[in-house]
View 1 (cartoon, rainbow, N blue to C red):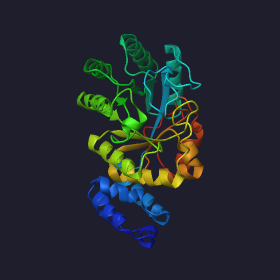
View 2: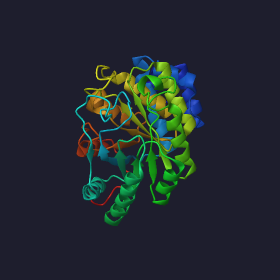
View 3: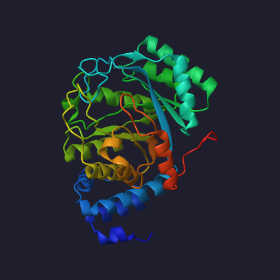
View 4: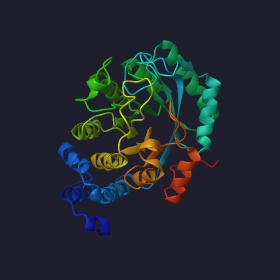
Length: 341
């Protein structure tokens, strides 16, 4: 493949290494190599994003996966994740709310109508109890009766029995984020451990479900810890990595953290793609503030190959039409686009 002008104009040893190692051979960068990507000067950022885009096209294809999410239980969580307004331990404006099954089915239909192929049911809990598991089973059955869409779940930490149940009910994918690097995790969460999260992730994979395991960056972690997180996710080999950027929420311990620089966010997108050349890398929360419209476009041309459309769990996202129109503008086909569009 002929080198593009941007790469020729910004020669960088790490980008030259990544072109051979990641693009040609399909081998993700190591932790130390990822740190070099995260430390690239602004002048080399276009070249890094271009290379990440080429890696995405070669190893993942051109399709973009679209997903909608909805919370069956919002707020009142007993955990103390310092970034999350759903924690019942913080003085945040989010209060516990349950969504009934008819509303859930309606949301699934509306999600499918946008062209999304995945519908994720989320609950703000440490882990599901028997009541919640029964509700999830009932919701899955009702959704499957009403609409043809893949169902994913994010219900916190699981037991082996719960993992087996979800797999037997046809849950396509389970989301359980590592959030941050092992070395920084105690600064962000104290009510459970990194290892507990990792145990659930491994059980999900062993049960045959796809693992969605994401990151939240911009929480005060160092560049070294950002590289550490990318390498730890790569070692886990999840099917999908949602990439979130901190949107500081009132009442949480990180409310005054501030919004990370957009160029640092784009460097992270390139680094995560170069760490995981074959993984679905999904735009998730915080991109609206961190990147804006132009940065969102740059990320889609820099390694991202999936998006969450519409709103998130407690924050507003971009309108679904805005993201779908942008994909059309960039000539990016939506995976299994529904006829209702």
